[in-house]
Amino acid sequence: MNKQLYINEIQVLFDDVQRARIFEDQKMMTDAVPMFPVSEINAEYEKEKGNAEFNLKDFVMKNFDFLGARVSIQREDQLPIDQHIEKLWDELTRTAYEEKGTLLKLPKPYIVPGGRFNEFFYWDSYFIMLGLQVSGRIEMMENIVENCSYLIQNVGFVPNASRTHFLSRSQPPYFSLMLDLIFETTNDQSIYIKYHDTLEKEYAFWMNGEEWLENDSTVKRVAKTKNGDILNRYYDAENTPRPESYLIDIEDSENTGEEFYRNIRSACESGWDFSSRWFADGEHIQTIETLNIAEVDLNSLLWHLEKTLAQSSALQNLADKENYFTERAARRRQMINTYFWDENTECYKDYHLKKHKNTPSEHIAALYPLFLGLADQAQAEAVAKIISGKFLYQGGLVTTTKKSGQQWDLPNAWAPYQWLGFKAMKNYGFDKLAEEIKNNWCGNVERVYSNTGKLMEKYNALDTETIAGGGEYPNQDGFGWTNGVYLKLKQN
Image (cartoon, rainbow, N blue to C red; front, side, top):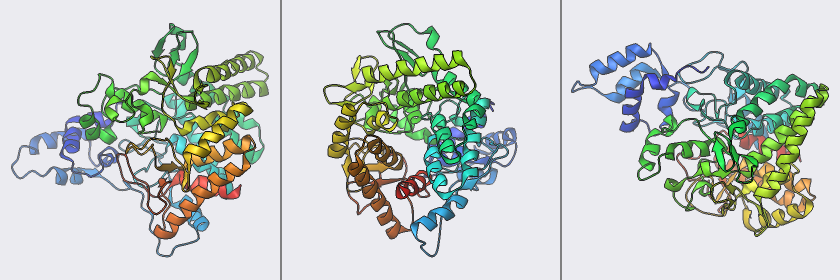
């Protein structure tokens, strides 16, 4: 599993292909499967590339297989949206019982998001599970959990997605929440015992290095504040251009600092690639400083992981472990209040580890303490007022209040945050606002489906006459988490 990335084995050819822009989408080459031994392809390339009549694209097409590089859903007759989604579950199902090119093997079938995303994605899969639950597809929900466990046991964490070039980063840690969904569906508490060891391993990954930290310092995904408190941040082990966005990263890196690539990759671990949330000047990707930020969403999710570990320990009468994780969860709950609650704006914000204060970015990840029940009623009321006044539009909840051209900024509405928003408001009794969030976004999804016959990766919340845009690639259709969240919201 930790074998050398095959992309490194064809680095010269890979670099030439990406710089020549022979594919509109740079992910194409990372997903390509070599049809012959890599050593033979390299030798052939060295021999042929100097010839006057040499054609790079022809050479690549002759030596690599691009089957399945894109998930395309075409249907002649437009079905009612819920029937369309039921068919999509089968059409988006994949298996990878052996490694091919960069694709990692997994023990169970899984559901891919769609479009250019034709592999298993970590946090997407939680929101896909919401819809599978509604559809009664319990086995597929269990498959997703089993695949995550397999990755945690064999890699040490769930990679961003199931490809070798993602073995340097994870995504928001949703595994413990996936177990809650299974329990909610089956009422079988043994799920927590079955995956206790997996929960511990994932926790060890996120906390790796904390024991060596001095005050006001960071290592990997852990930060110790100047007061000696432990917080977490997103991080990537590599500081090189992302293979799937190779040329974009190289071009963006001009006049930037030495950890530019790591900052870019670390933002990818958050799932928010990209947003003004990460930019020092709030405008330009060249000022990205993800490594300087401890995030409210990540720390809230890790509180849930600690709480789940306390629960799974209690179920097995592991008193010492139960006490340890109960104390860690209680401590993190305090830290979330101390470092992420901004008294001035009465909202949750990220914390800048170097400036020792909250970051200015207003973003929808402020929902996490409400989604997970960490906020008190007064805090929830203040956040609800901001959500209603600044984030909710006719097409759903936007991610930030800033229009930067990045896809995780205004005006885009993403499926995960519609569910988080709905559930967060329900948790604290703001039923009317919850209904508004649900109806605004579901109405937008239905309108786009009626016009196009497709479910999209993201939606424009402001102009409900158009489809969302921004970012490194066009809007994708399929689409796993939209299908899941739409079904779950309509059920509630």
